[in-house]
Length: 138
Picture (cartoon, rainbow, N blue to C red):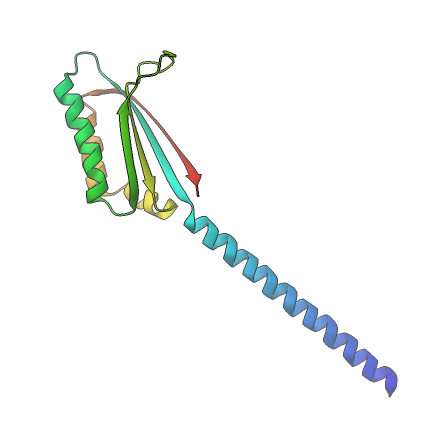
């Protein structure tokens, strides 16, 4: 009878360990998912304007880009500027726009957003090339 009690105790301990392991794994997955949701996305856009584009046209593009922050949700920060690097490694790209999104979901909703699409459509007549890179940050 005593051996039976020990066997039951061992089975109970193994079962409790399995439940604890499953709970710990579930908590780790939940934490990883929450962490990924919380990472901000920095969206960097560099523009090269076509030959003959006027300063007025460039200013219109800059103004339009800046206005996206107030028209599309999920943008937490906007920065922009004209190249002033003395290194001369810009390969003709003269303007940079940096949009920081609340998270990847906000960026993913921004890309097909009608306001963004309308803005991007209008760039075709003045932009010779564009370079885009995104990265995660805390």
